[in-house]
Length: 247
Image (cartoon, rainbow, N blue to C red):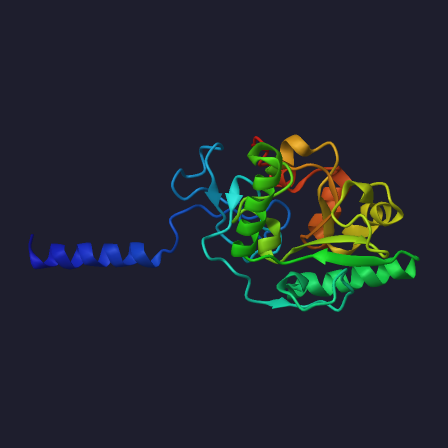
């Protein structure tokens, strides 16, 4: 190899390194604010594999059983929204990403104006906390049952800082089935999208989301996407046209 060829090869390698990530990033339909997660190893062609989301900081990022957050991911703009929780102590589970925190404050205020009082139950969870929680549920109910209502570490929306579980003003039925059908649950179903939130795991969509109906689990995606999802009666998976097997 002569000197000219050597220099040329080095130049080509440098350009390739500067070109950025090797996995595909596509903009969200009708929005352009996120990236559809594609498996880095499989090129997104195998829906049975688990993908690592390409842009975890994106507000409407898709995180589910098939699309996990990068290792050691932690949101860098977590703040504590000015809302009331069912517990008094300081905790990371009070926190949300800044944009979602402002939106949940507005949602709680809007609900109160309509005579509906809401309380926060649990918002952000670290990877380590989610791991402890998931293994606890497995020890209680077994793996098959636990995965219907609890996420494996790395695949929980709570780790994004964009999700929060809520309940009614008396604190009862916190993250329990009895919350469904309540005045608070009905208000959320009708108004959450006005503030940029969706009921992430709706009734009748269990085979798509992979989780049981959770009327208390709110996920912030922004007003535009939330409005489209509610108007069409779909899930976040269907919005991205990534309908995968639930387990």
